[in-house]
Amino acid sequence: MEQLIKEFLIDKALILLPCLMILGAILKNTPKLPNWLIPYIMLVLGILGGIGLIGFNAQGIIQGILVAGSAVFTHQLVKQTGEGISINSFNTKDGGQ
Image 1 (cartoon, rainbow, N blue to C red):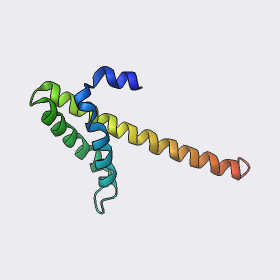
Image 2: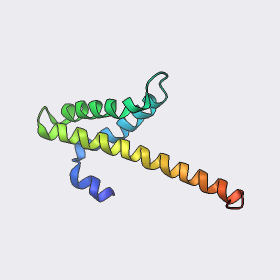
Image 3: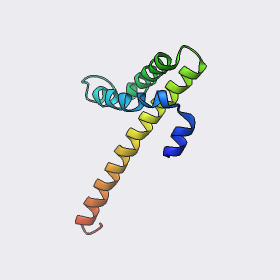
Image 4: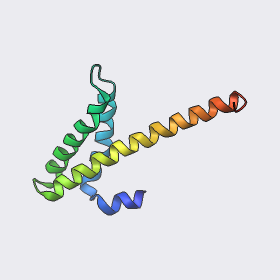
């Protein structure tokens, strides 16, 4: 996966990935903000970050979209893996029933 990310994302845009992940965690813990809205906010922030780093051109917009998608995808991988481990741990303690 790391090679795939480096193939499409330029080095300048990689700094946006941890920034967006932190902002996503902050948004997730914001009261009264619906969860469905968070990926859209991340997309807008990613595009603005891409434009800020690379310039107002197609490359900046594309990099912002890719970074936002990577941040949301990474969050879902961590979340789903954690839920899967929790379920498997529970089933193991319960005798697998």
